Length: 440
Length: 83
Image (cartoon, rainbow over all chains, first blue to last red; front, side):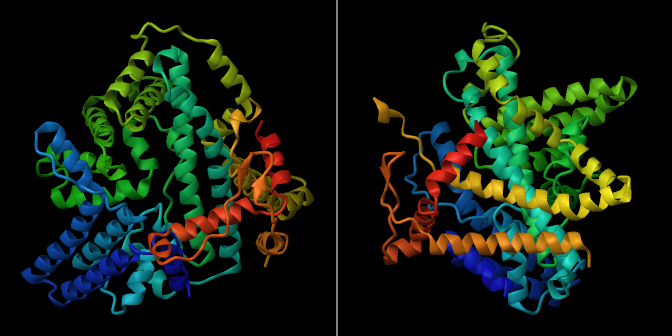
């Protein structure tokens, strides 16, 4: 039932490329069976290699071939005509899920599946198919066969889903209207503090967007009896790049650690090369463009520096220093992430550090900051653990007892409903296309 | 079973059911939006290429979004919340 629904959901957006999904899962299923049959013998390694290579090759063809050819054309005079085949939705996610399955079977951490359907369900489960999080096969193998839909899970899943929807529709979509005012257009019109403001808004936008999707996936999973691991743990309260990557998109970080860094030899063999490979790939995974690679390597370098001496240094300074350091490096990182044109990115950085001769502030900054002060305050508070802490405090210790009962049994469900209604309303409102020239 | 869970689940389901019933029953029939000065997305025609490329489903979504009941009022409300 869930499987049929998931496939319909995928076919809705991608009627043709569902063939790729079915094919990849078929290769994965066959690979898993043979790896288990040959387990312990060299042949298992060969099957693993071939089946993983097949997955990676398809990902490469769809996602990275155009990028490689473009780079090649700009570096040399070789120009190969290329027609973009379009990107099958969620291909990076299902490729990674299949790799996780094959490797887990090879390592003996999980049994190969006899039924093709069950593997297809793991790959195509609709809550996480499009935007993750990446779930390790070994973590959910039991749930695929024995999952329990409970009242408790269903209702907390609903709350979680609604929170995620609100994060995306109410906060991220509104922030997405503000950030381009500073990041797009003529960068010479942006003031120094305006540049910091613009990238801060973008940082909040991408957090609410991405973690909102993860919340919705985790919530939907819960409603249908799956328990997925958390993907975000309040990344902006970090004090270092190292900590940030333990709190930001945790599932991707874990995937690269378990399936790239450690197999390459971890920190025992060629640690610098391994670190480089992991961060190169982490960057590239976020998008087929050099600015994402730069963004990944930037964090790789920072993490290496922190390991070498920075963390020791900050442990002797007041904690505020570490927060300031982290705030600055993460915002610089988002500049690399946002601008796919390196020259515009560098120009923006020059503005941020007062090297492009623009004023400190201007009227535009004040107007936008003032107009959106409540939204920004909400977003900043919402990115900290404070709301969750307050909720726990109220639901466990609010006195007198009747007040707590009212909070738990009336207020929380009512707020859930209100948030759902508000999100639906804003989604309808988003279909509105303003017609600017109408009055002229 | 706790009241809060019952309430959360029933409110959620009630919202989904009533929302979809409203959409099906009170579909607005206009073809032009006066306030936006544009024609609304029409009900898409079935074609083989449209189905395979996924364009048909996107058009269907656009049609549904443009024909939500009381759309003008809802759009006004959402604008007043956002500003």
